[in-house]
Length: 171
Ligand code: RP5
Image (tube, rainbow, N blue to C red; front, side):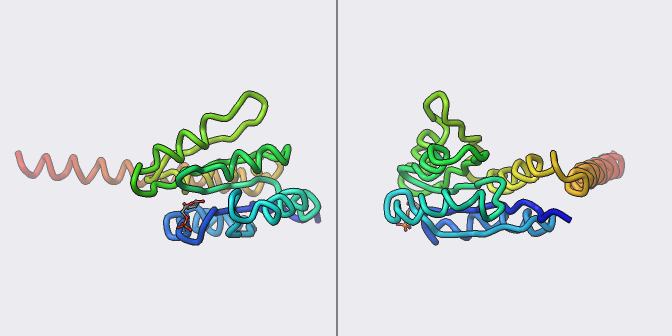
């Protein structure tokens, strides 16, 4: 059996970790193996590049990069690999993440970074997007994604039913 691809989850600082937790939790919920590292494009550039260059030989399939402020992490990673790179801009003070969003999303042509939302569902969606990429070569993961969507729809329909019941009771 071939070894499943791993996801490399990089964060620019340990101060990003709490907000990134939904990303790690989602990968765990799908049983997707990952390595999470604190590596900074600015503070540890040599170690970052070494990690990126070794990633294919260590069976990494996708990078997820979370950084705030002058967020160059995802872009620098994308410049050193042909693997897919997913960026999560972190919502740091004082600019609330707009700085990181623009730094992550405004990549020059030829160096793509799939950029997700600041805050909210961004970290979770980044994980789900990475899982969708890996699902292309894993029927088991693709099936789990189908189940996840069905479970989400069931939850929403239950909420709708509760609303309808409440409205009927009020009239
Ligand atoms: C970025 O700088 C990190 O991703 C973090 O969001 C931000 C601040 O880092 P700390 O000063 O909290 O270590 O590189």
